[in-house]
Amino acid sequence: MKFTRITVNPNQMGGVPCIRGLRIPVATIIEMIADGMTEEEILAAYPDLEREDIREALQYAAEAVRERTLPLAVP
Image (cartoon, rainbow, N blue to C red; front, side, top):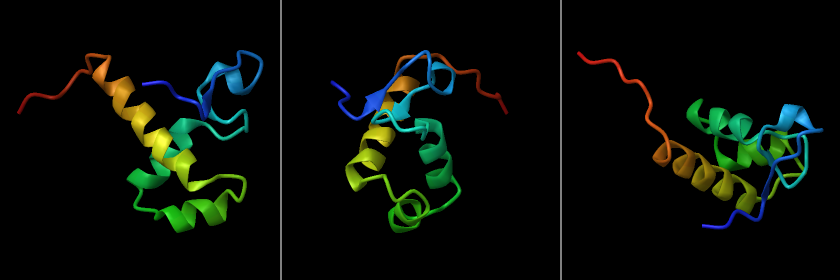
């Protein structure tokens, strides 16, 4: 999948993936969703965002997890 709304610039925000060159990291969007915020609440908090930015941030996060092995606690 090609991500058209996710940008990485080593001179901005330490090179972390951000939304459309804005200083809004993908991780911030994912964290807000994980905290239970709705799309409407996220868009109100960040007026420069668009709904498609949120969707692509989720797709990006899913792809990032798919590409890595994460340590999981074994019960």
